[in-house]
Image (cartoon, rainbow, N blue to C red; front, side, top):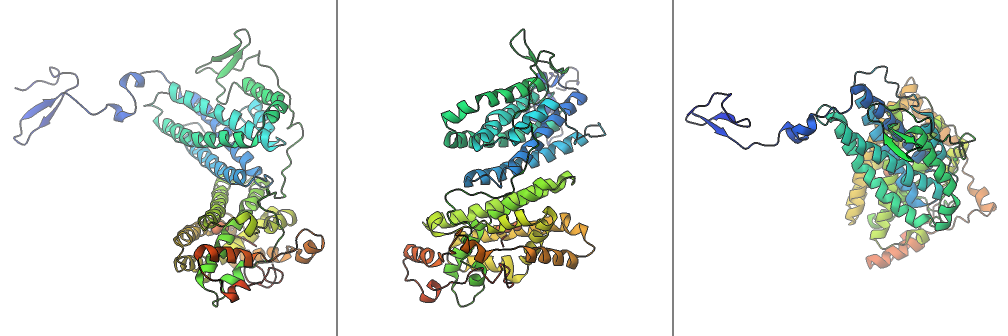
Length: 511
Ligand SMILES: [Fe+2]
Ligand SMILES: [Fe+2]
Ligand SMILES: [Fe+2]
């Protein structure tokens, strides 16, 4: 029997069977593509105007977090924090980029993405940027800023119309996923580095951060403090700042922030000026077998810790570039941090205690950060990375890893190579553009690197290092793990960086 459309049950549809007869079904897949219920899709939600207003504040928050994480990489001594700040800077840059694209979709030009949306929010982030110690910095980031951002994004999800504003919903959900990772790392980091005394010492400053947030109406600017009620009140679509909010005054940001470009390391880097072991000369010497060369490659990877330290200085000190410049450069910065951690894992996998057996120096980031201007540092980076592309560069290291019987070395070099190809492209996109031709850009990079003084002998005379040759001890320890007798020629290797630079040019790098 056929029903007319109007007679059919509300949630029934017709379909044709093979016999061409019409049948009805009464159960369906979820409605609205599974986004939310019909009921939820009927709520008023946020207007486009209000949504954009809030998005700009989330964008500002991610941008400031990116800035703070980046600026604090170089002088943060603790290795794990240096690496995590590199990741968290990258994640914040990616979410800021996604929010920029969303704002641009929403009928609201001019976009005004470079406008500070709120003076109190600005002060909140200025204070964290200027935090004098790791304790204050981590508390400000992981116990104040990021939890507040999480709260604002969750509230957005609760308040917006999930159907009408679905593209924003999606961004918020992705952001929240990674915000959870940041918070998880942050709480563990704080448990490890912040003492009860630290907390007590900075209690009044933490209260100042709260006051900034109250004055700003929260990250989203939707909460006004109502003194008479003694708490927050949701302002929904009509954000207004409370006239009762306390007016905070600047403490650590009373003076403009000064970026510290001198790299610092923790106690696991006991001889940071040591340039006794020239990895490149060893790697390219055909007389030496692949297996010990994996040690040199793990050393080279771990030494890449100096690239985030140096790139953080370029990103922090280079102003007025398009946002994509900062995003791309920060992706590269994170890759370099990953390469360093691959080196760490390579040694851990061999049971090698790298802090006592491998002297990871900071001479390259120190020299570049303190002797060159940001554009000159970028020139050196570009010069080195272009040099990694020919056959004897990253492909060579990958082939070496594969032939070494150390699968981890092969795997890490595979990804290191892929990342370096991306970095060469980032260099072409953001450095090369300023030169009339590629040769000139490379020549300038070479020149800048040649100007860098590596005070090999001076450091020795000043007692900063004895340039102790640590290679025989590392190699002997690895041979023990491998269950092989050390090869006397490999054991005797003692070429330093005194006269030969890392690109094998006579005199003195990284990447
Ligand atoms: Fe690398
Ligand atoms: Fe690179
Ligand atoms: Fe690199």
